[in-house]
Image 1: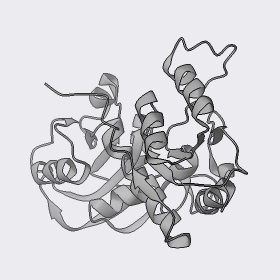
Image 2 (image 1 turned 180 degrees about the horizontal axis):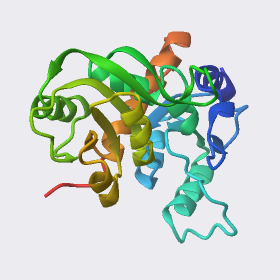
Image 3 (image 1 turned 180 degrees about the vertical axis):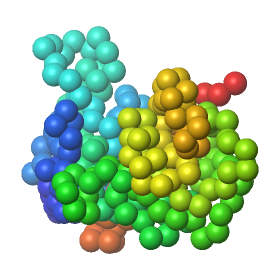
Length: 261
């Protein structure tokens, strides 16, 4: 079985054509025609993860975030992407990343987040085209209305968040309709409000977004890594459904690069 056979399952689920114009979903380095010996799954690729794959005898790493996001003019090992690239080439490891394609596809990141929070009747929040079922974010309904405090607790448990950044809840508000988008998507707060959500869960929100929308919606910043670590589960499910006997595992070395004190 070739590496491209494994990646074909990912691309059938999340076609690269769905990626945003600024993105770099796809092969980052390596040989798609090499025989696949196993794959390691992660959110971001580091030098430690390259070594981990090599130690396991795997020659494929599948990540959510692209290793090469901006163009390189030289490869001297002066930063993490360059060091990882050099290490991957030396160890014969192919890296494939599915970023906003997995964000935008039906069943992708936001859909998995919605599933973890128990949302029903889910639809895409920001369609990729009018009437499309693909796009960024998801909106849906909770089975029963709950308090903001209970909802915040559920978010922390669902995404393994040590803490949350959230706006002050309006007095007497109950949460029944929820919008969410994995990763940095604070710009979609207006769409969440327009769709009737009482709460919006995303990451990397700015101070002015909390200020500007304080009276309109409960805004929760659950963390970038926390909201997107479900990509590993998505990749695992997609690949094992087609190749149940293929050697596949989550990285043991990956950790959230942010700690909370």
